[in-house]
Length: 318
Image (cartoon, rainbow, N blue to C red; front, top):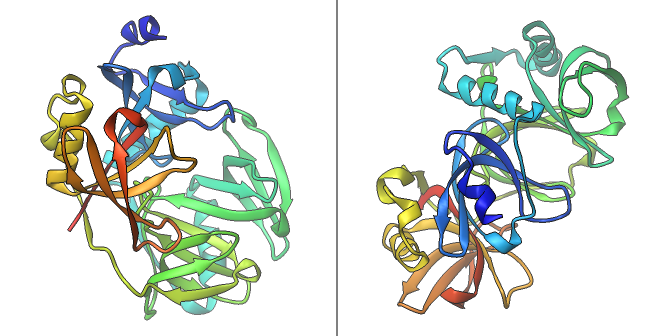
């Protein structure tokens, strides 16, 4: 795998896999740092999220020149464009007008089905009980399907497609935790008997997006009791030659700049998120943030030589 990586062009967009479950990330190969391969991480809607360090022995395979990557290139360019629009809709016809806008402007939708299949497509027509969708991703290129509303778990709209969605005269309910089959963090833009629209801004997700859920799937909405203040940061300035820095140097910079980190290590059976509270040459103390609660929940000591995966997020905790 190391020889394969060394022959990859640095500006080539890739799919890279670190598990056999079919899940992958998208980004560019940056370089090799001792036992780690370094990649950029790009969100499904074309935003740079940060860097991922994966132990070379854990890297399963690399995808190149795939149709999905061509779509990702388009989304990356859309994020750079100034053509993305904001829309304001009337309260009494909010979702009717929103779906009409999707159809008229061929807005790209990321549709998560109850079967846990996620596909991209355009809305062609909709009614109270059905959505007529034209798929265009790698698995369903140019096919069409009429779906029952009950088959759709959620619909995501990226900021590559719409800059902002607002309600005329409406008030946004900020900093909420929306309980469905998982805990979602964000602002509630609008809700009626059928649907709820959320501006999702989860601390652990390197992008922000709009999310439509069925109101019947929602258990409750609660207030975030404690807010962790954060800001976007330009990682290229903090790590100008990241492929030439060893893991200890990188972790030290994360400590000094309060960078949000996400990683796994050999003695852990689950992923950990947080900021490095204390650093020395052989270990770190991680101040952990609970993924469901979004607040600091614990501290843990981690030996640096036991880290197997590290994700540096483009986020600084204040």
